[in-house]
Length: 217
Length: 285
Image 1 (cartoon, rainbow over the protein chains, first blue to last red):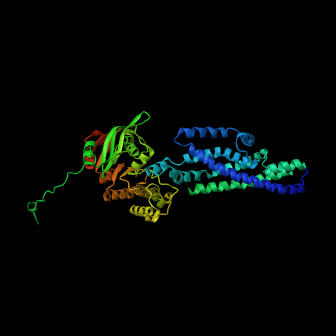
Image 2 (cartoon, chains in turn purple, red; image 1 turned 90 degrees about the vertical axis):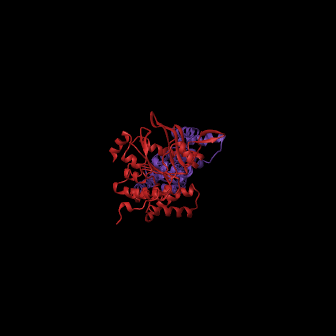
């Protein structure tokens, strides 16, 4: 392969567009995954079976089907009888929904790790249920799962190129269309390097965070 | 110098006979002072019967200590009162109100959440493992429930919390996190936290068992103080027999889910009737 820096230069404007979209999908997707995962986790501790059971079924189903299939489903099937969304929105919803079923497990472990005595103390003080969750349980649970949540953000980053399949042009999507138009392959290398440049420092950051949280708890 | 013969006779003062701390249900109903009452309470874990048709009551303001070998059901009684457990049979009353059941349309049904909450506010509990909220500073640990359960203003709750933290001797530690305190200090905060709800009954569940020996005295001193200076009713499970003797109006000896013997501490500790009590005391004294 003949490496041509000019090709890299030509690709750069579109590369930055792609980076922007990747980061957008990652940030918004993570927010959905963090929020919705928490909802799943709390719902699974509901005293009511009619809440627990459907939530378990839905999350189990989402976790056992591929993200790619889910993205196709959201983009091509859902609009038949529901809202149709732009490729980017579909990608964000798809990533967020898919990963929410994993973060739910993370939260669940975190909540389960809060000692029973904390619940008992809250009961003994008659703290209302919502207050018990917000002031006592979640602050302790989330603290211990921050590193695990961070790992899922990195996993999501690495899955994000899949949204190119439904037409959301992330770093990889831009590289693919650019390469197809120019019959070159430099753009793929640039994107590969870009993933490392984003993912590696992120994982170092998470490790630092983990050490800090462990030390101060 | 006066000989015994010269000593003037002390005129007999007319006093009421001392009220027994543990009384039969009929007696205390007549007196109208019973604060806690168990009626035929049974609790099973799996196939094991931990409490077997238990009847007893505690009069307001009295301090009652439950003793007995481990597994005899003492802690279960406290946990039932705190609604951390539900009885399988029987009823529990606190200050006349049913804790386990409520009346709806003239029928007794299992108590709903709101009803339990109302009755439970009269009870406070201190745990063996302290169970302070590790994510809150000392002051907020004590303020949290008064603000969010009793609806006190922040200022009122803070004043109350500061007073109680002073009472347990930790005014210097207001801004510390529980993990920065010794076990004994944590337990004293837990006592302040329970008292901040102004409960009528304070449940003490082996509150010194998790402490290093040199920290036990500080916690017991605080509790002695509270026992002697307030009219709070105490129900106490402990292995500290000296402490039990100091503060108790009555001691209940448990074995296998039943009360073996009950009476004033001097009687139980010095001259128990039952061989089972003697046996138990010989292992702990």
